[in-house]
Length: 163
Length: 456
Image (cartoon, rainbow over all chains, first blue to last red):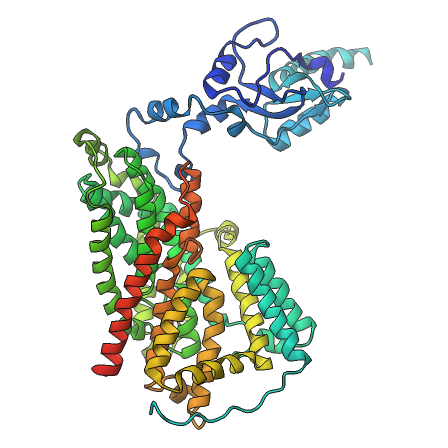
């Protein structure tokens, strides 16, 4: 079993010049496999189809979160309407300014353990899968690895019986 | 005394070692100013060159007070950083800042003035960088709540921290360095610098009132946001807070009496850091120690060695002779030259390398003037004291002159950039330079009046 066998083939993606408003809408309606139920992140590809980043709903949260609040414990001194005010200001900003640029990727023929290794070490829930030409061909999700693992657990009884 | 003939210095040789050390010194300082390479990296590498090229023996660089690392400065800085790092999670700084904003009743200028005073007082007790790091995030939050431009608040905070830091021995690195080299006590600074800093702060508040007083406006409905904040929610760890405040009070008391106790400030601070680490019952001091600003500490270490090199080869002596030549041994003129030159130099160069160079220079100048004296008789010569104070005032207040003049400014500008509204170099200077000139001018009058007219 390789990364490409578990991944979900690439459907939607973002461009660096999409606005956050557009990107947020894509995230809400994008398909995950068959269902159009929205995704938690989309890859960002440039005009040549090269992967240059990934934009997650976490990045949207970060876009409305003032940087200075990271430096001190100020959460209990915020007010009603603060998120809405900043969200309105940020709506027309570009994806390229908020996407995560250091994307953890995996080769299409990587073993599943290598995918687990990358996910745990870099604390990501999804990794874009690249083919030999470094083009994104799909996304591998934590959930699909989880299903793969549970299948293996259920089959373990049978394996032992065979012996 | 002022017209006493200058005793000519021991002639020194401008040999290979002289030019090598001078070249290392000049190139290192030029790269530090250019900011092409991180200043700490430059300082460490240039310092190592001084030893590798045999300008300094390793023993001199590490263990000789006149030529090497000033461990008094290093341990004072590290210990104060450890105390603050242990104090920070308690929430005390958030509490102070929110409480200050509420004291301002949501009035934009009133808040600005209160923040300036709080920043100045905290800067006098802690270092400026820490103060600015602790005050500015709340400042921007308050400006956001009032829906007004945070930039004036940020600039005001930086300027106030540099003025406030001038007041005490521990307030600003130049003072720590001067105190250590000149054997001045905490109370010396309180007696000689705090009074003028209080005057400067009053003038500063009046100045920002003229600049921003009428421009800052907000709606009454927004003021409510501030008044509804509950500062008591900031205190996360009341037990640790009590311990930290106890230790801080002990340390400050220790500073007040360190002269009488015959203990160096670094000893007092190290004791405080050790005691608070013990009281915090931390099992893993790793992260507390990791948060010490090691790049700053190593910058100091490197600079001390670089300056030691040029002291040893005689460059500093040569420079001191030039100054004496210029002022003809007139001590009032010397004080004035030192103050104004320091102010402009500190606006251009980081004031830490500047003072690291000036300290041995002033001592050398004293040796030329009073060759028969040594030790405290030399360092505390009544005619020399105003020069030390002029150096401190010039170097600390000069930090306001430009965006890169002081570390506090650099931090505030970095923060404004993150907030999406960058303060440009020229914009900072438009406020900083006039404030620098006003404060140094008042200090000039102070030094003249106090030490040359009233002689008190």
